[in-house]
Amino acid sequence: MRSEPLLAAEPPASVRNVGELYAIAFTQAEEAAQRYGKLAATGDEGFEPVRCVFEVLNQRELERAETIEKACIAAIGRGPARADLRWPPMDLVPAEELSELEDSLLATAYGAWALAVRHRERAFIFWTYIAARAESGLVRATAESLAREALRDGNLLRRERRLAWRAGRRESLAAEGTAVTEFSSAALLESLLLRGIFRWSQYAPAPQRRRLLSLIGDGLQIPIGDTNDTFPHSETLDDIKRRVLRLAEQLSSIYLDEADNAVDQSQLELAQQLAARSIARLADLRTIASLPG
Image (cartoon, rainbow, N blue to C red):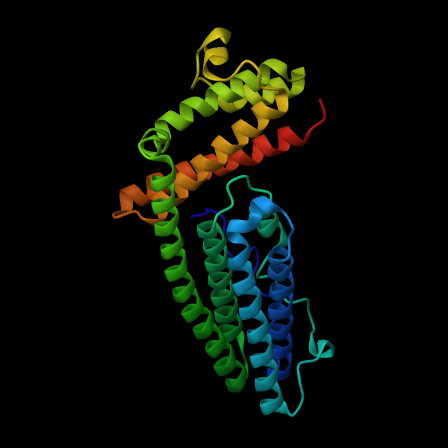
Protein backbone atom coordinates (compact mmCIF):
# COMPACT_ATOMS: atom_id res chain seq x y z
CA MET A 1 0.00 0.00 0.00
CA ARG A 2 1.44 3.31 -1.05
CA SER A 3 1.30 6.50 0.92
CA GLU A 4 0.86 9.01 -1.93
CA PRO A 5 -2.68 9.88 -3.14
CA LEU A 6 -4.09 7.91 -6.06
CA LEU A 7 -4.89 11.10 -7.96
CA ALA A 8 -2.06 13.63 -8.07
CA ALA A 9 -4.64 16.39 -8.66
CA GLU A 10 -8.37 16.85 -9.06
CA PRO A 11 -9.87 17.07 -12.58
CA PRO A 12 -9.23 20.65 -13.75
CA ALA A 13 -12.84 21.40 -14.75
CA SER A 14 -16.33 19.98 -14.84
CA VAL A 15 -17.53 17.95 -17.82
CA ARG A 16 -20.12 19.81 -19.87
CA ASN A 17 -21.88 17.00 -21.74
CA VAL A 18 -21.85 13.24 -22.30
CA GLY A 19 -19.93 13.63 -25.56
CA GLU A 20 -17.04 15.14 -23.64
CA LEU A 21 -17.38 12.52 -20.90
CA TYR A 22 -17.26 9.62 -23.37
CA ALA A 23 -14.28 11.21 -25.13
CA ILE A 24 -12.42 11.28 -21.81
CA ALA A 25 -13.34 7.68 -20.95
CA PHE A 26 -12.47 6.42 -24.44
CA THR A 27 -9.09 8.17 -24.47
CA GLN A 28 -8.22 6.76 -21.03
CA ALA A 29 -9.20 3.21 -22.06
CA GLU A 30 -7.20 3.42 -25.29
CA GLU A 31 -4.15 4.73 -23.46
CA ALA A 32 -4.40 2.00 -20.81
CA ALA A 33 -4.73 -0.67 -23.51
CA GLN A 34 -1.68 0.67 -25.31
CA ARG A 35 0.46 0.67 -22.16
CA TYR A 36 -0.67 -2.75 -20.99
CA GLY A 37 -0.21 -4.06 -24.53
CA LYS A 38 3.37 -2.82 -24.64
CA LEU A 39 4.21 -4.87 -21.55
CA ALA A 40 2.30 -7.87 -22.89
CA ALA A 41 4.52 -7.78 -25.98
CA THR A 42 7.84 -7.32 -24.21
CA GLY A 43 10.48 -9.82 -25.24
CA ASP A 44 12.33 -9.92 -21.92
CA GLU A 45 12.49 -13.56 -20.82
CA GLY A 46 12.61 -12.62 -17.15
CA PHE A 47 9.25 -10.86 -17.52
CA GLU A 48 7.45 -14.02 -18.62
CA PRO A 49 5.70 -14.71 -15.27
CA VAL A 50 3.65 -11.53 -15.54
CA ARG A 51 3.21 -11.28 -19.31
CA CYS A 52 -0.10 -13.12 -19.26
CA VAL A 53 -1.49 -10.65 -16.70
CA PHE A 54 -0.87 -7.73 -19.03
CA GLU A 55 -2.30 -9.66 -21.96
CA VAL A 56 -5.55 -9.98 -19.96
CA LEU A 57 -5.46 -6.33 -18.88
CA ASN A 58 -4.81 -5.19 -22.45
CA GLN A 59 -7.80 -7.17 -23.71
CA ARG A 60 -10.02 -5.82 -20.93
CA GLU A 61 -9.15 -2.22 -21.82
CA LEU A 62 -9.73 -2.85 -25.55
CA GLU A 63 -13.17 -4.24 -24.69
CA ARG A 64 -13.80 -1.28 -22.39
CA ALA A 65 -12.95 1.15 -25.21
CA GLU A 66 -15.33 -0.70 -27.54
CA THR A 67 -18.14 -0.61 -24.97
CA ILE A 68 -17.60 3.12 -24.39
CA GLU A 69 -17.69 3.78 -28.13
CA LYS A 70 -21.00 1.91 -28.50
CA ALA A 71 -22.50 3.73 -25.51
CA CYS A 72 -21.45 7.06 -27.00
CA ILE A 73 -23.04 6.24 -30.35
CA ALA A 74 -26.24 5.23 -28.58
CA ALA A 75 -26.25 8.47 -26.55
CA ILE A 76 -25.32 11.10 -29.15
CA GLY A 77 -25.39 9.32 -32.52
CA ARG A 78 -21.62 9.21 -33.06
CA GLY A 79 -18.48 7.84 -31.51
CA PRO A 80 -16.15 9.65 -29.08
CA ALA A 81 -14.17 12.50 -30.66
CA ARG A 82 -10.98 14.12 -29.41
CA ALA A 83 -12.42 17.44 -30.55
CA ASP A 84 -14.81 17.18 -27.58
CA LEU A 85 -11.92 17.27 -25.11
CA ARG A 86 -11.39 20.62 -23.37
CA TRP A 87 -8.50 19.40 -21.21
CA PRO A 88 -6.14 16.39 -21.42
CA PRO A 89 -7.77 13.38 -19.72
CA MET A 90 -6.07 12.52 -16.44
CA ASP A 91 -3.60 9.65 -16.65
CA LEU A 92 -5.09 6.67 -14.82
CA VAL A 93 -2.33 4.22 -15.84
CA PRO A 94 0.92 6.22 -15.45
CA ALA A 95 3.82 5.01 -17.54
CA GLU A 96 6.26 5.41 -14.63
CA GLU A 97 4.32 2.89 -12.52
CA LEU A 98 4.47 0.34 -15.30
CA SER A 99 8.15 1.05 -15.93
CA GLU A 100 8.88 0.46 -12.25
CA LEU A 101 7.31 -3.00 -12.50
CA GLU A 102 8.94 -3.76 -15.85
CA ASP A 103 12.39 -2.87 -14.48
CA SER A 104 11.89 -4.82 -11.28
CA LEU A 105 14.05 -7.83 -10.55
CA LEU A 106 11.11 -9.31 -8.64
CA ALA A 107 8.24 -8.77 -11.07
CA THR A 108 5.42 -11.17 -10.22
CA ALA A 109 1.86 -11.82 -11.28
CA TYR A 110 0.80 -10.64 -7.82
CA GLY A 111 2.57 -7.31 -8.35
CA ALA A 112 0.96 -6.87 -11.77
CA TRP A 113 -2.55 -7.55 -10.45
CA ALA A 114 -1.89 -5.24 -7.48
CA LEU A 115 -0.94 -2.45 -9.89
CA ALA A 116 -4.10 -3.07 -11.93
CA VAL A 117 -6.17 -2.81 -8.74
CA ARG A 118 -4.54 0.53 -8.03
CA HIS A 119 -5.38 1.77 -11.52
CA ARG A 120 -9.06 0.90 -11.17
CA GLU A 121 -9.17 2.48 -7.70
CA ARG A 122 -7.79 5.63 -9.33
CA ALA A 123 -10.49 5.43 -12.01
CA PHE A 124 -13.18 5.12 -9.34
CA ILE A 125 -11.95 8.26 -7.56
CA PHE A 126 -11.66 10.14 -10.85
CA TRP A 127 -15.24 9.40 -11.92
CA THR A 128 -16.63 10.24 -8.50
CA TYR A 129 -14.98 13.67 -8.84
CA ILE A 130 -16.56 14.09 -12.28
CA ALA A 131 -19.98 13.06 -10.96
CA ALA A 132 -19.75 15.42 -8.00
CA ARG A 133 -18.95 18.40 -10.24
CA ALA A 134 -21.44 17.60 -12.98
CA GLU A 135 -24.01 20.28 -13.76
CA SER A 136 -26.02 17.96 -16.00
CA GLY A 137 -28.03 15.08 -14.57
CA LEU A 138 -27.12 12.88 -17.55
CA VAL A 139 -23.39 13.57 -17.10
CA ARG A 140 -23.69 12.84 -13.39
CA ALA A 141 -25.53 9.55 -13.95
CA THR A 142 -23.07 8.41 -16.62
CA ALA A 143 -20.05 9.30 -14.47
CA GLU A 144 -21.58 7.45 -11.52
CA SER A 145 -22.07 4.42 -13.79
CA LEU A 146 -18.39 4.52 -14.80
CA ALA A 147 -17.40 4.84 -11.13
CA ARG A 148 -19.48 1.76 -10.24
CA GLU A 149 -17.87 -0.13 -13.11
CA ALA A 150 -14.40 0.79 -11.82
CA LEU A 151 -15.42 -0.38 -8.34
CA ARG A 152 -16.64 -3.74 -9.69
CA ASP A 153 -13.47 -4.12 -11.72
CA GLY A 154 -11.37 -3.40 -8.66
CA ASN A 155 -13.13 -6.16 -6.72
CA LEU A 156 -12.55 -8.67 -9.54
CA LEU A 157 -8.90 -7.70 -9.81
CA ARG A 158 -8.44 -8.04 -6.03
CA ARG A 159 -9.62 -11.62 -6.33
CA GLU A 160 -7.02 -12.26 -9.04
CA ARG A 161 -4.41 -10.61 -6.82
CA ARG A 162 -5.27 -12.91 -3.91
CA LEU A 163 -5.11 -15.98 -6.15
CA ALA A 164 -1.75 -14.88 -7.55
CA TRP A 165 -0.37 -14.31 -4.06
CA ARG A 166 -1.43 -17.79 -2.93
CA ALA A 167 -0.06 -19.41 -6.08
CA GLY A 168 3.25 -17.59 -5.71
CA ARG A 169 3.48 -18.59 -2.09
CA ARG A 170 2.90 -22.26 -2.93
CA GLU A 171 5.51 -22.15 -5.71
CA SER A 172 8.07 -20.53 -3.41
CA LEU A 173 7.53 -23.12 -0.72
CA ALA A 174 7.78 -25.96 -3.22
CA ALA A 175 10.91 -24.55 -4.87
CA GLU A 176 12.86 -23.46 -1.82
CA GLY A 177 11.55 -25.65 0.98
CA THR A 178 12.78 -24.61 4.41
CA ALA A 179 14.92 -21.84 2.90
CA VAL A 180 11.73 -19.79 2.43
CA THR A 181 11.24 -19.63 6.17
CA GLU A 182 14.78 -18.37 6.67
CA PHE A 183 14.87 -15.78 3.92
CA SER A 184 11.30 -14.51 4.27
CA SER A 185 12.31 -12.99 7.60
CA ALA A 186 12.22 -9.22 7.19
CA ALA A 187 14.72 -8.79 10.02
CA LEU A 188 17.22 -11.07 8.29
CA LEU A 189 16.69 -9.36 4.95
CA GLU A 190 17.16 -5.93 6.54
CA SER A 191 20.48 -7.10 7.99
CA LEU A 192 21.63 -8.50 4.65
CA LEU A 193 20.52 -5.35 2.86
CA LEU A 194 22.40 -3.02 5.19
CA ARG A 195 25.53 -5.13 4.88
CA GLY A 196 25.18 -5.09 1.11
CA ILE A 197 24.81 -1.31 1.05
CA PHE A 198 27.89 -1.02 3.26
CA ARG A 199 29.93 -3.18 0.90
CA TRP A 200 28.66 -1.23 -2.11
CA SER A 201 29.81 1.98 -0.41
CA GLN A 202 33.38 0.61 -0.19
CA TYR A 203 33.66 0.66 -4.00
CA ALA A 204 31.66 3.85 -4.68
CA PRO A 205 33.04 7.35 -5.39
CA ALA A 206 32.93 9.70 -2.42
CA PRO A 207 29.60 11.47 -3.21
CA GLN A 208 27.83 8.15 -3.79
CA ARG A 209 29.50 6.64 -0.73
CA ARG A 210 28.04 9.35 1.48
CA ARG A 211 24.56 8.81 0.04
CA LEU A 212 24.80 5.07 0.54
CA LEU A 213 26.02 5.38 4.12
CA SER A 214 23.20 7.83 4.85
CA LEU A 215 20.76 5.02 3.99
CA ILE A 216 22.36 2.89 6.69
CA GLY A 217 22.44 5.58 9.36
CA ASP A 218 23.09 4.09 12.78
CA GLY A 219 21.53 0.78 11.81
CA LEU A 220 24.77 -1.02 11.06
CA GLN A 221 28.12 -1.03 12.86
CA ILE A 222 30.24 -3.80 11.32
CA PRO A 223 33.85 -4.15 10.27
CA ILE A 224 34.68 -4.64 6.62
CA GLY A 225 35.59 -8.28 7.17
CA ASP A 226 32.04 -9.13 8.20
CA THR A 227 30.63 -7.94 4.89
CA ASN A 228 33.19 -9.94 3.00
CA ASP A 229 32.11 -13.04 4.92
CA THR A 230 28.46 -12.32 4.13
CA PHE A 231 28.86 -11.93 0.35
CA PRO A 232 31.03 -13.88 -2.14
CA HIS A 233 34.53 -12.49 -2.71
CA SER A 234 34.08 -12.95 -6.47
CA GLU A 235 31.19 -10.48 -6.70
CA THR A 236 31.72 -7.51 -8.99
CA LEU A 237 30.33 -4.08 -8.18
CA ASP A 238 27.46 -4.72 -10.58
CA ASP A 239 26.76 -8.01 -8.77
CA ILE A 240 26.65 -6.16 -5.45
CA LYS A 241 24.28 -3.52 -6.85
CA ARG A 242 21.94 -6.16 -8.25
CA ARG A 243 21.95 -8.08 -4.98
CA VAL A 244 21.21 -4.94 -2.96
CA LEU A 245 18.40 -3.84 -5.28
CA ARG A 246 16.87 -7.29 -5.17
CA LEU A 247 16.93 -7.34 -1.37
CA ALA A 248 15.45 -3.84 -1.24
CA GLU A 249 12.65 -4.85 -3.62
CA GLN A 250 11.95 -7.99 -1.67
CA LEU A 251 11.60 -6.04 1.57
CA SER A 252 9.26 -3.54 -0.06
CA SER A 253 7.11 -6.42 -1.30
CA ILE A 254 7.02 -8.00 2.15
CA TYR A 255 5.92 -4.78 3.83
CA LEU A 256 3.31 -4.07 1.15
CA ASP A 257 1.95 -7.61 1.58
CA GLU A 258 1.83 -7.13 5.34
CA ALA A 259 -0.17 -3.93 4.89
CA ASP A 260 -2.48 -5.64 2.42
CA ASN A 261 -3.16 -8.50 4.84
CA ALA A 262 -3.20 -6.54 8.11
CA VAL A 263 -5.80 -7.75 10.59
CA ASP A 264 -5.99 -4.63 12.75
CA GLN A 265 -5.30 -0.88 12.54
CA SER A 266 -2.02 -0.93 14.47
CA GLN A 267 -0.58 -3.66 12.25
CA LEU A 268 -1.76 -1.77 9.17
CA GLU A 269 -0.16 1.50 10.27
CA LEU A 270 3.15 -0.16 11.12
CA ALA A 271 3.25 -2.02 7.81
CA GLN A 272 2.43 1.16 5.90
CA GLN A 273 5.23 3.05 7.66
CA LEU A 274 7.73 0.28 6.92
CA ALA A 275 6.55 0.05 3.33
CA ALA A 276 6.84 3.82 2.79
CA ARG A 277 10.37 3.83 4.22
CA SER A 278 11.36 0.79 2.19
CA ILE A 279 9.96 2.18 -1.08
CA ALA A 280 11.78 5.50 -0.54
CA ARG A 281 15.01 3.60 0.17
CA LEU A 282 14.57 1.51 -2.96
CA ALA A 283 14.06 4.66 -5.04
CA ASP A 284 17.27 6.15 -3.60
CA LEU A 285 19.22 2.97 -4.33
CA ARG A 286 17.97 2.86 -7.90
CA THR A 287 19.01 6.47 -8.39
CA ILE A 288 22.48 5.83 -7.00
CA ALA A 289 22.84 2.67 -9.10
CA SER A 290 22.11 4.69 -12.25
CA LEU A 291 24.93 7.18 -11.57
CA PRO A 292 28.29 6.77 -13.34
CA GLY A 293 31.25 5.51 -11.36
